[in-house]
Every structure is written in C-alpha cells, then in structure tokens.
Image (cartoon, rainbow, N blue to C red):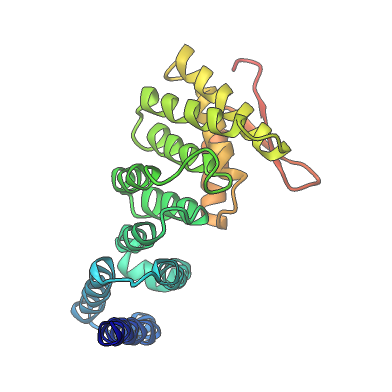
Length: 260
C-alpha cells in the first residue's frame, strides 16, 4: 500500500511538472506572438504546441486535483483571451480547447460558461462547439448545485437563438433556465426566472420576434463582458429598433420604438 501511494504521488508530481512547464512556456509564447518579425510559420508552431499541451491536459490523470487543474487552465485562458495584439495574429481558435479542459475537469465552474460562450461563439465563430461543450457539462449540474447554475441554460439559449437561429431549441433552454431559477427565493434568481420565462414566451408566440432577440442581446449587455462585446450588443439592439439606456446603477435598460 505504501509503495502504491508513493507511485501515485510520484505520478501526480510528474504531471504537475509537465503542467508547470507548460505554464512557464505560456508567457514565452505570448512574447513570441508580439514580435513583428516572427514568421507566420513560427507563430503557427507556437499555437500547435499550445494545442498539444491542452490535449495532454484533457487526458492526464488528476489524482483528485481536477479543480486545481481547471483553475490553472482558466488563468491561462484569461491571458490568452485578453491579449488583443496576439489574437489579432492568431484568432481565437484555441478558446474551445481551453474550455474542453476546464469544463471537463470542473463542469460546475459556473463563471467559465460565460467566457466559453463569448470567446467561442462570438470571437472564434464556433457556436456549435460552444453549445456542444455546454450540453455535455450540463449533465453535471442541477437547479441547486452549484449555485446559480440556471445561468448556464441562459447562455446556451442565447447562443442557440443569436448565432444558430434555433428558436425552438432556445425556447426550451430559456424555459429550463426559468424553472431552475424559480426554485430559488433571492431577488437575482427571481429576476432571472422572470426574464427567462418572458423570452421563452416571446419565442413561442413568434420564433422570429425582434423582442426575443433584443432580450437575448440585453442579457449579454448586462453580463460582465469586454468593451468589444458590449459595443456589439448595443449595435445589435439598435439595429433591431431598440435604444440602450444606462441606469445610474449601471444596469442597461432598453427602450423600444412604438412600432415594436
């Protein structure tokens, strides 16, 4: 038993070393991407190398440290996504790879789902991949565990409605979000239940309703998103006939034209 314990500890230590080397290499990769003299082939090699590391992290044994691995990889993603200069050269194609590791290790990591939806659907242009990863991870969630897990159904519904045009599927997602949120008594959950249910009703009455699309973009607008995403949401709302008003508390409200 003692020998087995030592073997497991040694194996986990080896995995941590590999992960640590990858984390140390990440800043070097970002520095390389910032160099204007770096050939495109070399840039592609750095991206391929990071993808290999992420693929390894999907398969490596965790020995009970899944949450730690998920947190480490999420920190890498934050650096990756926030580096506008590097992403201008490489795009956002690695976004779903990060989240396949993160949610595979910790599907109850609720803050990660918004980043998944934003980075993969909106920036990487892969809403199908975002929805697939979300759908798989939802099997590990419930209305009560973890807290505010109903937001995941809302993010899924937004992707389905705005990026794939699947209004019927989006309606189902918003209805489940409303059901899960209604099982809680706090004000935030009550508001989420109300907004989600109204969006589902809009979709049921008129699958092509501008109001439903405006409501979905408003959800994005009131999330903690970056300036580029926020501006796109405002542009989309205005294109649909809405006017964005910012309340003193920082919450966005939408004024609709009389024809809507």
